[in-house]
Length: 602
Ligand SMILES: Cc1cc2nc3c(=O)[nH]c(=O)nc-3n(C[C@H](O)[C@H](O)[C@H](O)COP(=O)(O)OP(=O)(O)OC[C@H]3O[C@@H](n4cnc5c(N)ncnc54)[C@H](O)[C@@H]3O)c2cc1C
Image (cartoon, rainbow, N blue to C red):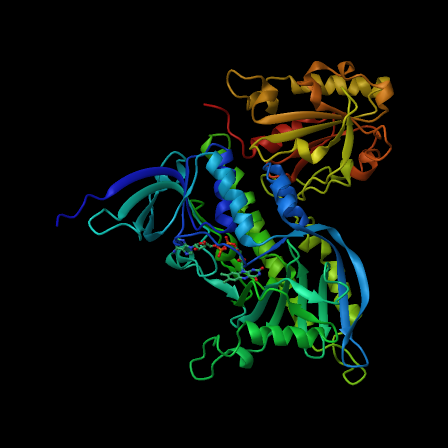
């Protein structure tokens, strides 16, 4: 039989792996109208199980892509965390219940993936399943590597499901490749990227069920420290509950083979372990165990997240950690969220290739912090609790302090990117509540044109554009009004970033930037037409720091953001992070910020 010709094709971005990281990236790139393909070796998607916790920051990210409504509709909200310790009668009792640092939601990975798959389908992108890469080569030609329009990555793909005789091979020439292929990443191994950290792995048992129970915190996230082991109870959608248990090697590993033995620890045995830790509370599955796994994971970070800023790895491919801090899916999807806009800007010719190096500097540092947190938390979680008999054990206060101390971190809200070409940490004092390098925090304002209450984060979608927020201060004050008018003149200079990087044929504020104005004052005293036309390119773009008519929303935004009556200019990156702050009198500082990575249109 003749060997069929091998097909060659070109693509801007090839994503290998359609888990949460790969799908987040594919959806973000599809939204940015990037030419993207995504492959996965699995013939069908994950149906249920695996990761399930979505942090407050990840919810915001879903909202920024217009996917928040469905996520919230399908998932289960978690507001409280309860802590249980051993009591004097051999059972457990709660001694603290407190509010989480922002609402979390829980939904199984299969449903999360469906949200992305449906969104991508509308944009014409679908996962190519039963497909694996068999080789990957990166050009060594420096000219090719530095030219964003070149295709320096050559990937051979193989289809696993085609009948005999049909060509199963294709050579893809890609501008960029993302390895989002999970903890055993083929891309990572092929480029010989080491995983640094602890060599030993931990074994977790996981059960999903709808329980019949008298446990009072069954609808709260509950961290149980008992004399029979620790476990974590997480409420889930549709009355389900998930229980995580960290298991001892000897309970799971077959000493002869050194491998996990599912006969030693199946769902019945896992249920017994859980029931023992949760005694005296009853936990009886009403309809059997709906999903279970033995999940083996180490605490490691890849030594590199990119090769020459042409091949990247994201998600479990570059960091693994225990599931108890609920970060697996979150960290993975947020890697992709960080990378996608940078690739999109480079492909559009808006940004220099050097922007791409901030993916590794920002996300690897975060991953290292996550592993350090996970190690500390794991030690406390798996340590014996302090009791009358065991005075050296982990005290309840120690555990609680760790949980609270890292609340900002695990919620994703405290994630902080260090200074770089896209994070300029000057002028923090002008807006002390908007931490440069952290995500822009939510706040309700009143729209000047119609007094409608508006959540400012809703004006910051992940649409590849930088947002310029002009906090105009007390516009009613004549001196401040004069400052604002002088600032507008500065912004109309040809060399100002808004004009320098304008898209040919479009108005300066209609292209790479979106401009909003936020004024101090009362709605009753302010008409939006009072503002210079430059600051109100559309009627919806002027906000006032006032309270809505019901008295329920808005007000105190300036004081929350630490901005005085003299105002401030705030740049928000396309991923929602504060990139730079400048005074109204110093627009040139923003010219310098954008000049460090942005390119003029050719
Ligand atoms: C069995 C299992 C159980 C888990 N249980 C939990 C849990 O209970 N709680 C928790 O928080 N986390 C759990 N996790 C981890 C969680 O699923 C991950 O942290 C999260 O999904 C990370 O997303 P990711 O996209 O980086 O990787 P993954 O979700 O692993 O996705 C990687 C994708 O790449 C594909 N792929 C891999 N190799 C190739 C290849 N060579 N070619 C093409 N495609 C490839 C895979 O099929 C997969 O679809 C579990 C993971 C597994 C595998």
